[in-house]
Image 1: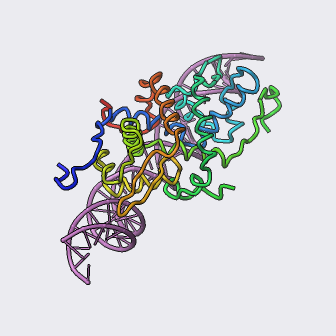
Image 2: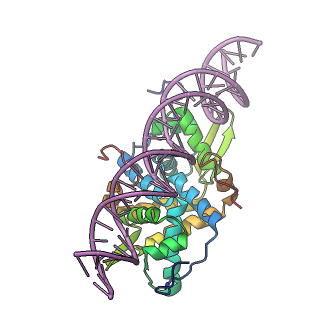
Image 3: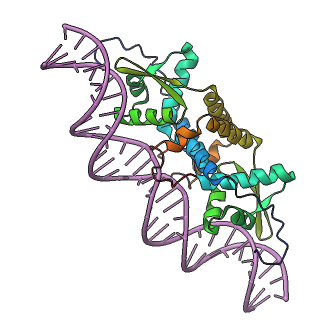
Length: 134
Length: 134
DNA sequence: AGATAATATTTGTTTAAACAGATATTTATG
DNA sequence: CATAAATATCTGTTTAAACAAATATTATCT
């Protein structure tokens, strides 16, 4: 009811499709982890550098320097969420970026980052520890 | 040492600027929360609808239905990270989307979401609880 | 079939950060 | 100056999810 004081110049925005917000948040959260981002970037870089090279998990593990189990789960997550596609061949699984939009999204985010690196680096409300950030 | 078996056909991707990954991850993480996204969208919708209307915090609180303290902190985070800009006037603070790139980023993410809603909705590795999602 | 390689899953621990509620701070108004 | 409005900060609790290490599964090769 907002009380009848100032006529509340509110736009009264529609409640928005709540579920939709949660989904979109999940999508962003998937990219909101340095480990997964690094995996994604390893894939992006190798594709950009060599055409359409896929990498299998062991190669990715070596490149990103995380434990095998972590990489496996992160990859499952990335595949599940549509960022990466997987192709099983023998006992290996080959991965690659699934959608060109992923490149665009990451590139765009990087541009946004450029215009505000300092702020994001020092935001105490997102992850307080985060060592030096040299 | 990887053992000398198969000569590792690795691309040997550069370690990448690690810090940079962490920063980019933070940027995504900032959007990786339904509450913050909802706040952002309230701002985006009101701007898109009415030109350049700013909203002050109390209006936002009403629109998103979170506690005042939460909204205050989320807004501080969004401002700090460059997504939103704030203008103090009297005892109110007016907020608006800070950069057109924010629109592009969210819109692009939404497109990506469209092509994989089902996957993201059901990814058990990101947030296991997440009630119904009607 | 046995051995090993590649990947997946499980378990237990730890941590970033979301949240509510209470309180503090700042600015305007009677 | 006292009161109320608007926003900010603090405290304690809870939770999603990252992680390592161990184990399980699946596939290839001799």
